[in-house]
Image (cartoon, rainbow, N blue to C red; front, side):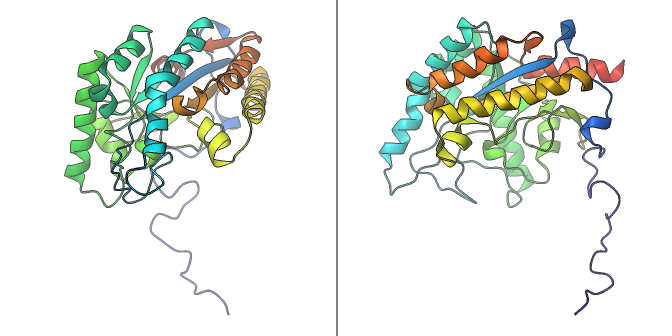
Length: 309
């Protein structure tokens, strides 16, 4: 039985993408990117400070790290809390010892519940990236525009007031968006977005409220995916980060600067038996010449400057 003639016809069918959020292109065809000081790889470390309510509704789905057992799921709740009370400080010390910067993705609820924690991150020079209200308030197509706008503005108001920073970056909880999320985020004053995982480099992203920059924030090499979801061991995590970095570093020799983005969850990587796996990978990266430790905003600014040159 053959398909009807109009089966593959729809209004936006054309070469490239079926939307106008960005211009379709292959990475290897784009102009080379030059990082400050002739660096080959920008190292972008993004720890996440999340709050999972004990009585999560889990609608329209449960995000990674959500409560698992019947209420009250204290086993998983307290493990997540471990990250915000213990693990994050172990991670902070590891990065400080290596002179590395970070952009910390923060739920607004964390800033309210743990103000001293956010203050410690800011004091350490970390950039704050908005990570939504909490892990039970997801952005999705079933959310009314006015409700989503309220979520975004409330989140940013809390984080900007608590951190004293402009808060330029946005990462949706669980990377979940509605069709309007980029427009709402841009309208609220953010200028880079971390939800789309379709590239290794920043790229220009269109919104109804102005231009954004989409930042590479891969989920396949983060600690949750490898250690929890895939049930791999700590050596596997180290190997994945090293292998990922080595390919980017090799490409940078002929194709221009690259971004090595590492997404981390303190309740996972901040465990005593796991922190060494991250440190081994970082030490490998730092043994190479031309590695630039940068915040998301610094990477965005350098990338944009190169596009305008």
